[in-house]
Image (cartoon, rainbow, N blue to C red; front, top):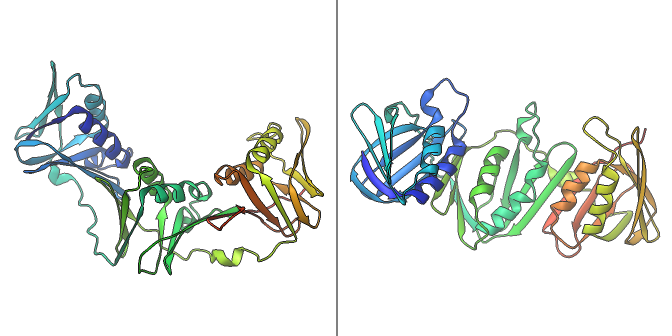
Length: 365
């Protein structure tokens, strides 16, 4: 194998593909990046048996071939090369020769035959969505993905497409995050994408109005984002009927400035820590939201103004869960609905229904 390419292109590709490379495995090839060269350019692939990231670089190929290179060493070398152009070649013993400017490296490679095959996706359905919309939808829901491996179905987000409405739903037992957008596609499908995959997609997807393509198989899905393909397993299992978790109506409703509420909750949070957790006490009445917190470290009180209608209510909330929801609303004002002190609070936009966050209350001691 022998090719030449731009250093910046190769460095960016290796950095992105490297995120899917396994760091703890008994199979040495999985700690590497598979490089394949053909007439058009080179393909790089990282795969940890759960998620694979693949990309293509158009470049000058003098000799076709393939090899697996240790991901960490390759990444460290390529990112520090001095020249604009990188020349890469291999010999019959899978030794990899890298040259750029006056820098030369010889590193030990692994035969490409030892690299596991990526899953073959037998397409069942596919649809597309604007990259910027997909990025925003994942960002506004990934915070509620569970890390409890005893309930693996909630370690991912539900993608629910029906009647040209695309929803992403995350649940961790203490909160629910729902984000929806109208899309133009004729499919109806539900599938669960692992949280780890969503995190990698966030790093690759741009804010531009380009299309991201999603292809479904029976057990895997492929996200095609510009010149990257992310192959992921699907999580099997029955996701909660999230619609049943949303109680209709509200006894109390308030409209409040998001930044003001975030700041007030952050001030109360100063008395909480990883070792000390006490609920933020919220008292909603007249035109004010009064907040207080009492822990072994001390006491704090604050108050902000809001437009309030309905019954007065007092409720205890986890400061982190409340802040996560408020910070991911990304609106100047939010509408908050309450159904007493023991039901989850609903946080939504003042206009429209693009997102809905539920936060389960905490009981006072």
